[in-house]
Image (tube, rainbow, N blue to C red; front, side):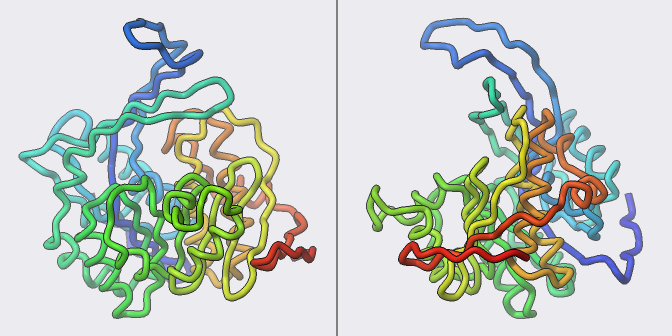
Length: 329
């Protein structure tokens, strides 16, 4: 499918990342060893951080291009159809003849919490040649979104292209896997959840606060670090300040995909010139809508829904030492 012509007033978001077919099991609890436990429901959805973030960016009004890899199989067709249905530019999406499409099994518990079993397959076959073929698309984008579900050498190559051309790199360092420190230092904005932040700052010890971890990560990224806290909102660390953005009220049904909604929404808002805190508020609204729906890609909101949810929450600025100062934006 040919990509539509970019609209001149829309931000252009390039996403390099995974495409995964999600077989979602809704369970009353986890089974114990040796136990067979019936699911309350099972659904098949398109997912993967790359696909989710590209679709989310597109639904929020951006032109979105996905650099990724799927297999030549039934799961690949599901993923292809989901991307084309949302008019994502797939001219840099490769089909691997020798590797099956990525597959994941999210297990969703009451309250929306989840654990995920994942087989990356074709996602790990992404290559440096793909990055080179997408060089112009990355160089002319308003932001590049990366995650840790792609080979590290491919992520680093794409980030370097973006850095060379002054394109902001928004790195969602998830899931935490072995990685060279270089990838973090190439990020303009680093986005992680609270568990990932702890894993990236083990040297601070187990008693370190989320604010201290956010501040440390901001010294690693080139401009900003964001730590998402679920129902507690998010911390934004920049310069010498850590700000708290409260979460929007939401009844969690399924948290799969909410982080991807946040990352994509932040990229879209920041690319349109929003201040970091305002972009994080926009992203928090997108995440809040996502958790109220089942599935990853199916849960991602459209722009009108996010605009309807946005209000004027109080944003609390915190120093690295823990002092607070409330301010309204």
